[in-house]
Image (tube, rainbow, N blue to C red; front, side):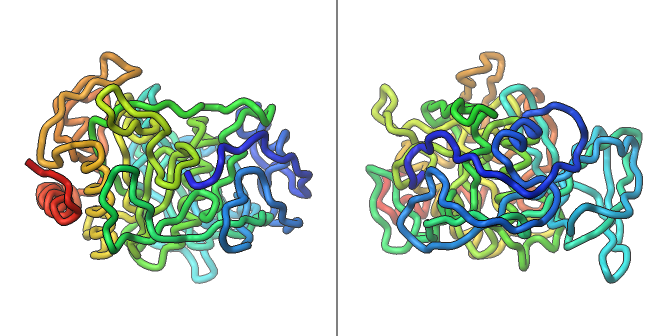
Length: 408
């Protein structure tokens, strides 16, 4: 991360009220303790919070508006929401479909699919899908139940930030390529660092843990085919972050990096103040970088770097720009960690000794389940994109060679 480890988050009164359920959760405790926005889009004066003092543009980013719906059971219709929706986070026990109501009427039904990430406690999480400014929606669950969190990632009270996009900084010890993707650090996309803390504002919910790198895993965010075009990627980052850090209580953004359709790279899981994301301050016994653990493959996160390509790739491919940035990022990571992108790894998780797998070193989320069912079944990174992994591995080897890394 590009800013110092934030101290205790700044407490700020809020003129909003929580319209969610009266259940004491980490979310409700955070809302109460920090005054975070919960339901009504009421602007308040922006502040510069701890950890947002990066040099760069002086801009404002919105807090998340969120409202829980835990009473949908096997499905139902929500005729009105407390604010216009930008995203919907759906946790379901079976196949689920959704349609939205906007000013133009009801949309077509679509199946909810995508990457739910995965914690050290097990696979699965809510799928975050775009809601297209909807004011109502209908959910259908096939032989199961669903719970929903309604989200608005653009209209909440605004915080002032001082951070800006810039070229991706190369990791320490790597060559310095002449052309690197645009990079957006956490502060610049609006990561609210208060989400990483318990309600006392001092204790980190999930302190960063660092492990030697064993594998690189590619994901897609999912949601719907139209998300490949015209997507507000920073809003998507804020929505995923809120869902994973607060609602799921994972304590942070689950993927170490994300890449949008324009090829812009976003910092995910907080690591340390070093300009390059992903890695911590220390080296392994072999003298190689140590990665910060994320939450992107259930039970298989220690030593496993996750890169999420924002989009839904069940029927189409990532954009050329996204694919090119993905290739560059993977080449840099593989190069400094001395990984063979065409090789195979005998993976052993550092926290879950039963989580073992023989798997491609550069792999996809769905391949973890094929290697060991403990990881949980998923179509991520999409049935159209996954068959491209062999060619991606070759592209990464070629890019490593261009950068000056040895490839054997």
